Length: 246
Image 1 (tube, one colour):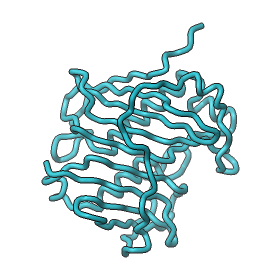
Image 2 (cartoon, rainbow, N blue to C red):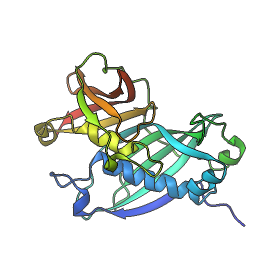
Image 3 (tube, rainbow, N blue to C red):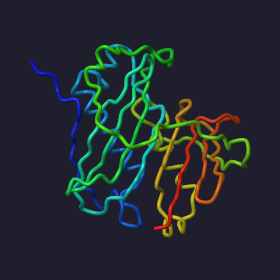
């Protein structure tokens, strides 16, 4: 039996209930599309959620960098391509390309994933030989995620407690919810006047129900912001956003 193709291709049509007040899909929604594609791509190749569960392991998203040329609008057909670009001992890199109906790329992203032991919650070595079969040299013009300068000890945080709607299938703080809470730190007028061109997020530790958190934001230079979500003064997640005028 032939192995599936290295590159996964998935089709979506934007719907009104997925859009923001500007009539465009949001960065968290783009993140949802990517997680959907990544999950399906992995499952179709034997290392998805069920396969990992049988090995008492689970995939966790470590870092994600998204670069946006244009936000898709309502009722727009979009195609999402995803592929593995690199496999290491503990981490694997996955790329994404979101294209419009004419085949023009509108979003690129690069992500880093780790497999963790479900009991110890510690990283576990990857089967590099198995995964390397699916590594593709398809170009991904996104700079790799880097270190995000901490701001959690430089700013007064806004209190937030993890709620039911924040949880994922594992009972932990959903990775997309981190994005939503950080973007909610910005005033609505900024979204009216400007666009986020690059959004980068680093997941540092897991959150759980009832966890008392603090949300932080600091402008590092004009139109460049760093954010953090902290617990007892220590970051559980950091992010950065680069804005441009519309």
